[in-house]
Length: 377
Image (cartoon, rainbow, N blue to C red; front, side, top):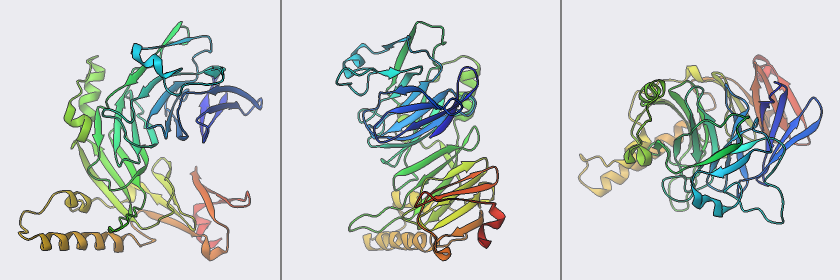
């Protein structure tokens, strides 16, 4: 779910989910505005552009992300930039059956990432975040990767045709510092991102705790300069498939198998499990002062001559990660609610909105706290 704006600046509520369909409602008139189809699987996230809320991004189990402009009118025709894409069905993703319409009401898909083939995501795409200034969207996936995709802006609402672009290759792909599915990605600033992985369980292997990583994208200034000068940035194969253009600023390991994706508001975030809600000030996370243990797992220490010594070192690194991840209070946590101790039902989600903590639980129960009151309730 996300919020958007109509051409008259009235609020719009955008919903999507298991059917792969996007529903847009006007909460003031209580009427449905649009129904948009295209994804070939369940939609896993929907997010709006931070400065242009009529542009939204959806991710899906069909291994793709899609960009939509909700201001493009229904009569506008959608054509493919690649003629071969038309064989996939309107709008060049999920073939429609039964004669149903591609969409009802305004809104058109103007870009879709290639998924499952080529250099795109190889598994379900779980989350996306639109860059506030550049035409770039970050996506995260079950395949352990975070990818950055460049896109062309949508056409004017007065244009007669919308050309749907299929983005075949990301400009950057980061997969060196996550060992499990990446369930959350978010731009904290124009060059700094936060990504979150879930706890990993592998039969016959040691488990990895979940992790929050704050990291800097080192090529931001280069792309910004190219955009300002009207120069097209040249993609290169290495950055598009396995980039090292990043610097890890901070990281936290979390041993919570039921951890949900972070809810972020400015520099504040809520990390929710079925029994604990943590309120985190991301600006207070301690800067990383040592090499990332996960990266050390990928590069053998040449000073260790014997395989037994190497395996022992790996076990020690994993043990340290697992033990450190069990702490409820880690640097950056400014408040917490332990639901089990309050005899409350299971938590489905929690969000922080302008300093107010809102919790949704079982039996359609909603609770509201001020963070300073969280431990006393």
